[in-house]
Amino acid sequence: MPTLEVEFLGYRLKSPIFVASGPASHDVKQIPIAEQMGLGVLCSRRLFLISLII
Image 1 (cartoon, rainbow, N blue to C red):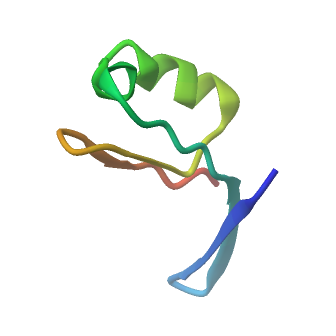
Image 2: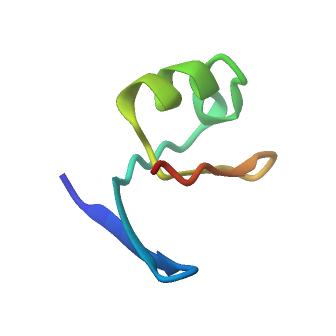
């Protein structure tokens, strides 16, 4: 699975990346699913969510 690596305030964060497209990707029910999977970034046309997991 591809990962996203980010340096922030001296910390290196590494999170898996999940990409969805189509009508289902705009469903807010995906946010809890993404959080359970430990995702770093979830993007769609209507939603841009960045969660830094430490």
